[in-house]
Length: 138
Image 1 (spheres, rainbow, N blue to C red):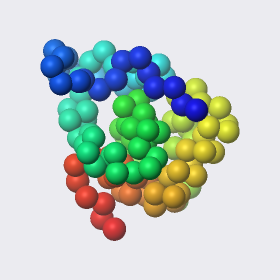
Image 2: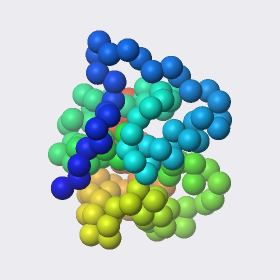
Image 3: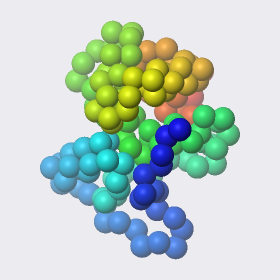
Image 4: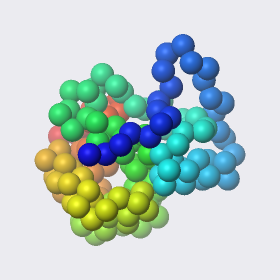
């Protein structure tokens, strides 16, 4: 079972965190969330999350946790710098950085496959799109 981090998405009625615009602060926030799951700053990326759409997926809890911990954000960064080799090379790398064990990583990769993510680029196109406001290209 994946334990959700103590700090989660902003609930209605809570004070909004200031939007981070400095590249260094954004990188620090990405690393903090990726490794520890703690949200201390607000990124434009956070606004893409669509709770209603994500709740329709039976794997919503795990996928939402990955979104919150900026897994998809980091995967997008990796694929922006390198080409997809049609494996889970970068996904495995990022999940390892998140300090997940091999069994949990394999479980997550199975969830990706069930949701149309058969490689790193398909994880972004098909899996992330199930969590954000835009529709899947399929």
